[in-house]
Length: 144
Image 1: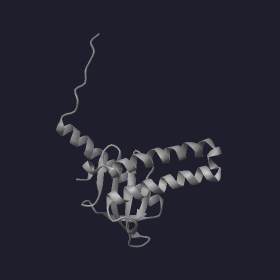
Image 2 (image 1 turned 180 degrees about the vertical axis):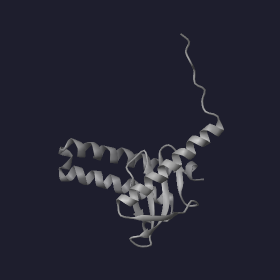
Image 3 (image 1 turned 90 degrees about the vertical axis):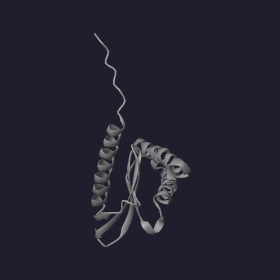
Image 4 (image 1 turned 90 degrees about the horizontal axis):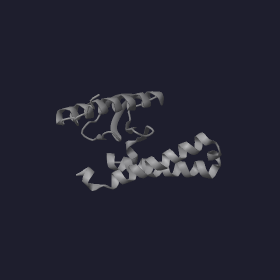
């Protein structure tokens, strides 16, 4: 029996994988907004940022329930959104979510909700992803 070795993807294949991931995250962000009762009308690609396969930060305008613009986050973490008035840039939005999630996790602990194993696991996930988001937004090399 011979062992097959897989060769790493070339630049073209890597770009195709990245584009597929970006499309998937865009669909995930739109679905998340729809579940929250927000109907997207368009994305602002020049201000949206992607760090595949970890996080995508979308600047999305809505048409319903009213004309508003949101930062919407998707990726290898819980999806979330916030009005753009909270953060001027994608980087600031990441920082906002990082700090907000740390507070949410602490509130779960303080309220006693983490006695429920599901809530405890969710609080741990929030803290873990919040710490990762903070590191990403702090890394100047990623924001050129």
